[in-house]
Image 1 (cartoon, rainbow, N blue to C red):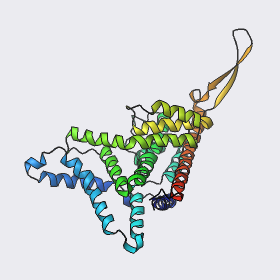
Image 2: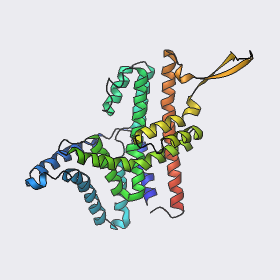
Image 3: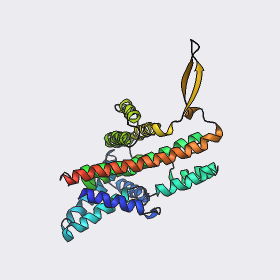
Image 4: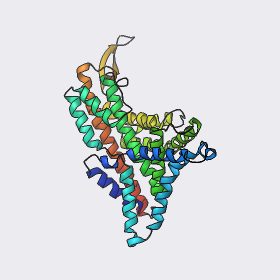
Amino acid sequence: MKFLVILLALIINHYWTRDRDVLNDRWFVKFQVWLAQRINGLPEHLAQIPWLYPLLVLALPTLSLSLLLVLIDGVALGLVTLLVHVAVLLALFDHVNVNGLTARYLDSWRRGDYESAFLLLQQRWHQVSLDTCDDRSSLHEEFCRFLLSSFFERLFAVLFWYVLLGPVGALFYHLGFLYRSRVSPHVAIHASELVLRAVYLLEWLPARLLGLTFSLAGDFVAAFARLRVVMLDLDRSAVSVVHACALAALSATQRMLLVREEAGDAGEATTVLIDAENTLDEAAFGPYAGQQIEALLALLHRSQVIWVSALALLALYGIDS
């Protein structure tokens, strides 16, 4: 059933062209505030337990979903369970229409309206500030990071844990991701660090699998070589691993090599290849950056095809459950 659920969720997510503001993450902020108030109302010896708040933040929604799945099991020949699975995935996916956002961003970029492009990115990715986007190249890099982080954290990692542990596992990862992005002041620092470490471990394997997928969907040699370098790097975040592998996967089509003839030591002509990415002038950088974003989006779409194909093979041989 998991393959059917994922296929339905991806199809709906692809053709749902409007931003799903009704499914935003503000519920989590309200839930944090509500939970903190309830914990503060407990007896002091309970309220002072440092692990209580992060434990309840992750456990209450997860247990509620588990209970719901038990109650609806077998209702209407499993159709209700199927609909709940699809609804959970759609709620966990990115609420932004990434294709539409990219089209609007590229339109502003190609018109030279970089302020509009920055504001559009900042509206959807609050980590971005003027300090991190003080020129065109840094703005371009941040948008590429936005695409990859959104794709990994709100799609691939969710599907990975759904395949392994079902909707409960996907929700648990998503709650950890939201907790990391909105660490509450109501909890002790060492307790938060434990949750952040757990999220890091939950993302470790999916990030490297996505890097491997990029090597299959793009320049295999360059991407796989980069993956080998970052594979066991424990200091890198998951998004950093994904970003490095994605750029390496694009190198075959995106790196422009300029050929120049130079005289060698013996006087004969020698062919020299120059990486044009580092030698682009101001006029050439704009079109190059736009092409790279389009290529990156195409790489992400090809990666989805690879996963769906792999899941279809698993379902065909009865491994899917």
